[in-house]
Image (cartoon, one colour):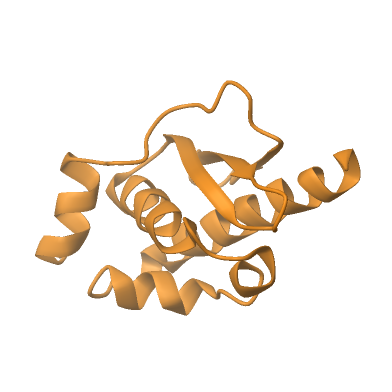
Length: 122
């Protein structure tokens, strides 16, 4: 079962979509379940994530985790975002079934890859 908060993120994601002029992107896929999460970031000169968006092909948990991740990371400094853990997303969503924790792990991995991409391009 999913919490009301997780279902809300799934049904009405606020951060779905692409950032055309993103200065960092990261993508993670899981062969076992077929989920793919791509995260786009727009970082300002002070290292603040001004915008964070996602494109996710996956289940309820993958989409909900992606949206919650973007909401949690937006407006924060890169250093603070890099400290985020998958448990933070699970908590934000009001819990996930344990077999779906990997969706929040994938989201964190995609976000960290987007930050790595941003740092390489600077």
